[in-house]
Length: 127
Image (tube, rainbow, N blue to C red; front, side):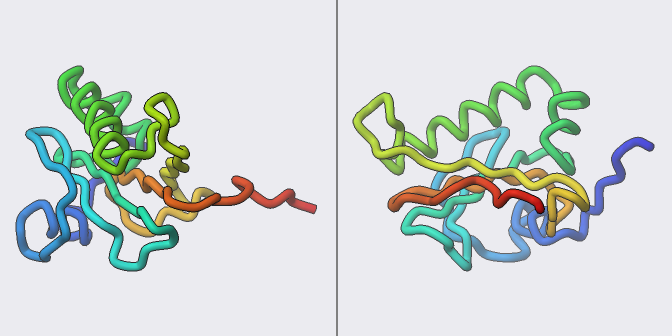
């Protein structure tokens, strides 16, 4: 079944300016802003401006400009935060939850960039 985008989700409302945010970076393809409930000293969400539900949705249906623009926005945010390991930063965790098993809470593609402390192991082992 193709993706169905809900234009009433919180990130769509942020993109339309209906809900304020603490912008870290913005360009024609992406918006990055601080998470309102940060889980690390740096916790920034990066969202595409297009109506994409998950990363695979953007990768499959997005234009080349949208895909490249979104990906470069992630890199620019890491540079703004000073966390890129290739530039003497301490590193970061990048997370994107997708669908029910990925525990996605907002049906708009978003990447969490977490940094500023050791983040810990990625996932617990299932027994």
